[in-house]
Every structure is written in C-alpha cells, then in structure tokens.
Amino acid sequence: AQSVTQPDIHITVSEGASLELRCNYSYGATPYLFWYVQSPGQGLQLLLKYFSGDTLVQGIKGFEAEFKRSQSSFNLRKPSVHWSDAAEYFCAVGARKIQGAQKLVFGQGTRLTINP
Amino acid sequence: SAVISQKPSRDICQRGTSLTIQCQVDSQVTMMFWYRQQPGQSLTLIATANQGSEATYESGFVIDKFPISRPNLTFSTLTVSNMSPEDSSIYLCSVGHLANYGYTFGSGTRLTVV
Image 1 (cartoon, each protein chain N blue to C red):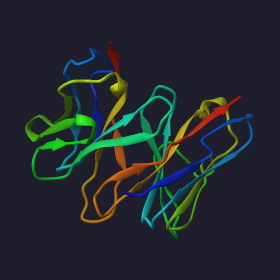
Image 2 (cartoon, each protein chain N blue to C red; image 1 turned 135 degrees about the vertical axis):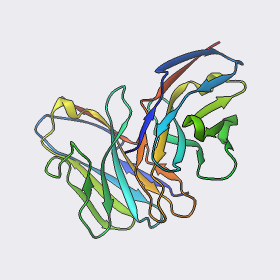
Image 3 (cartoon, chains in turn orange, cyan; image 1 turned 60 degrees about the vertical axis):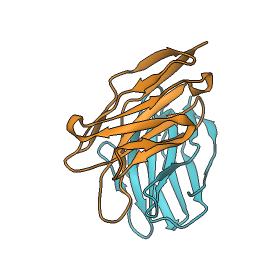
C-alpha cells in the first residue's frame, strides 16, 4: 500500500531564505508524486507533479522538486521564499496504472511560517 | 484542467441532521473522489465515485454514513448523515485527469456540527 511521510510538521524560515520540505514515500512501483499547497481557508492548489522523465520537476510559484528513487524521496525546494508562501504543504503519492485515475495518499502536511 | 464548483462552501449544522455537498465539474470525468480533512489533519479519502456504479468506500467509511450519488459524468454529491461534532471537517471533492494525469480539487466545504 502507498504511504507518504512528511517528517517536518512545522518549519519556519525567514523571508528570502531558501526552503526545502521533505517527503518520503512508500510504493512498490514507480509512483505518481505531487506537491499541493493549501492556504488558510482555501482548497488545494497543485504546485507540481512527477510522472516520468526528468527527475527535477519545475512547478508554479518558483517551486521545484526532485525525485530520488534510491531514497524514495520527493523533496520540495524554493531558492527564496516570499511571505505569501506561508501555507500548509502536502506531498501525495498516487498509484500508477495504465488507465484510470487513482486515489491519492497524502502526507500529514508541513506548515510553513515565514518570518519577515 | 477541470474547474470544480463545490457547494456549500461552509455550513453550521445541528447534530443528528444531514448535509448534502454538491460537486459540479465543467467537463466529463470518469472518477470523482471525496476526501475529508479533519481539523489540523491531512486529507483522507472517503470514497471513489464512478458514474453508473456504486461508490467504493475506504476502510473506516460506510455508505450509511456517507452516501454518495454520481448521476452523470459531471456531478456528484456526498451526504454526511446523522451528524455529530466529530464530523466537523473540511470535505473536498477531486477529479483526476487522464489527459495530463493531474488531480484537481474543489475549494472544499467547511462543516461545523454543533
């Protein structure tokens, strides 16, 4: 069964500093991997996704993530955070099948606080 | 990507009553998913809804408590039945895209049971 671990429940960084949010997954085959962001009182917005190909994935808002099969990781990074990046970040894994969308399994989330 | 309209956006309900949440998609989709996000928690899948068949429920969720309808390829409802304060959560619908393997979420329904 799929599972996702986000080891950091809460991270605080200063505005302009770099950011890395960790995500480790467990799945028997090559997974679909996602990062979502949820601002307070809002729904989920997709930041980026990985299905195949280049293991370094670029997303919206200046985010990127790197898939490392050997480490079962898909860490999210941003070189310089902005105050508007304060939100909850969720890593998710989906089962890979030939056809049909599959359910997502989410990590517990990492709450990001930005210091001015 | 698909645009999802979910309503109501929030509601405060009395215990013992039921609430039906609607999810409308602007394009035809094969599968729709319903998730629950309890306060301060991550998202947990309640069930997967396919058009024309019974919904598939995850462990810990039952049809009597969370009946789902999927009358066509663009619409689904989730009912939270006989509510208790423990049902206070955000409920989100989601659709998956075969075209680009993305998953889109509705804006959620914030439910408070008093």
